[in-house]
Amino acid sequence: MTAYKEALGRQSLREERRLAYVAFTRARHDLLLTGSHLSKTASKPRRPSRFLTELRRRDLLVPYADGWVDFDESRPNPLTALTQVGTWPLDAGQTETPGAQALGNGQSHDDGGADTDRAAALRRARQAAAAQVAAAMSEASPTELLTEPTPVRAASTSPGHEPEASDDTLRRWRLETDLLLAERARATSATPTVRLPEHLAATRLDDLRADRRRFALDLRRPLPPEPRAAGRLGTVFHDAVAQLLSARGTLFGLGRPGVPDNLDPQDRQRVERWLGTVENLALLDDYVLVDTEIDREITIGATTLRCRMDAVFRRLDGSGWLIVDWKTGRRQVPVDQLSVYVHAWAASQGVSAGSVRAAYVYVDYPGGRVDELAAAGLLSLDRIESALTPGLPSDEMTPLPPPEHPG
Image 1: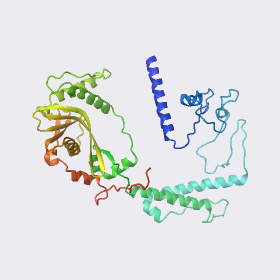
Image 2: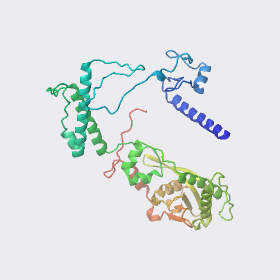
Image 3: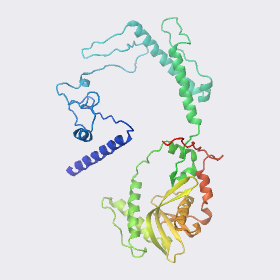
């Protein structure tokens, strides 16, 4: 438990340092550093950040406003004495007093009967407007709501009185409603517009070819993938198989590489089974390992594709090459995207693409499943460039013009 708490402390320090680095390096001209002694209703002060105190100790801070203020123990946290009382939801006929606030002794302030009546009328009007909008949305499409907006009327502020259509509140409601409906209609019908990055991972080519609209949305709002245990185990396997293949020049008589001790028995058994599949893979007969985890780039059109090859082998007689991409799952992916790897490796070695083989190896299948890129399935450079070139009639992703000024 002591070691665990120390590890948590080190992790917390690393995270605080990372956030401090981000904050410091994002400021263009001035950086305002602030801190609070108390948080919410706490009565015990917090220690200031070590990064703030270090800057102060080295006289690197310029005071702003009151500057550095020490904690005053004689002044309690004002939030601990603040009490607000209310009920929700409000009854439609209940009187609402704007600005009324319950105090510690039960007293309250009242700004006047006229304001009270108006607040109640506005509340009833909001409820009526919300009901009409909900009814209109359930009966009409967004386009119909835009072309023929449902009239919105406020409840009268006094018996027998109907507010005029020029009322500022009504005009604001109608304007906001039209803007919200227009925004929703545009979001559901507009084609996303992005600029294709100059550098792109080769594995994203399949995403681009499969669904250009989704690919564009991913570029606009990139989200990190959800962490999965299978992905972490796949990383362990990739490290282990790299050790396995690098142990000797050939695959015959290789010893078992080290598998992390922190794996549970079931995961360890799976990794060892996968490694056994690699050792007995007929695809690798007559081939010798060149290297693992090889990075290559190839520029096609205006885009540079980055390739990370799991393993590259060369035929014993020197007549050809073999690129292998390990897959620990069973979800199959299109094999033609390996074409980028083939062209990138062929260009780096100065050979023709026909002398380079490439295959996915799914090690979770009994004995391994090999999905090799056939010569007929090899995508030409022109086809890859056409997939990377937006603006074609069939494209759903349209590029933005380059900026006139850097940044």
